Length: 265
Image (cartoon, rainbow, N blue to C red):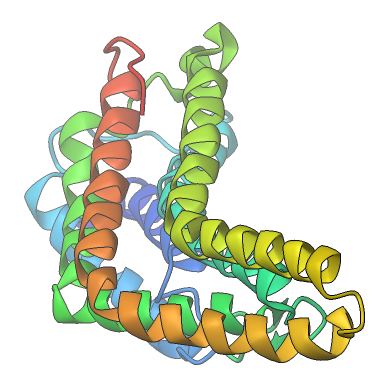
């Protein structure tokens, strides 16, 4: 009982980081995943981490314990949000493609997030989730939050790094990288749609009797869907690189909080 009382503050801090991570990180934060499963998984991982790494430094439950809880929640949310930002790049790329093809106003309700998303963005997001599961990416996400205690122990300097501005600088770099990845994912189809618009513009100059609105909309839809079908096999390599960027960004964040230098994402 005495050992249980000594380890209880450590376990509570670890549980706060685990639960905040699963609230934000892709796949586990989906509304389709029951809250009981999230809490149970966080509790199970808390017991493992407490038994393996939670006994190195005992935490005293004093007046500063509330700040320790906030710090652990901030660490978990930031780790999960880094992975979530890269998955958002997939939906942003779908939004670019939808606007060019003509499906910009045809949004659908995503059952995983409960928000209104573009059609092709939702399609690519579901493909990314399926590929993440096929690559055992969910195992790497769990392994990442468990290994975070080797880099960011309970006595970390998260608030100090936030005060120095290194965390905000890293998040801005990661945010810009996310937009660059979304443009790279959408670039082939966006470029093809630009050439299609250019060809339709030349057609109106050569033969003004053609109604560009009657011809252009179905033509862009056919060209867009044809390109999507041709480029679908290439998504395997693109998403594999995306997952590598996710885990690399999470590793850089752990390095920054541990006191390492800020590097480009």
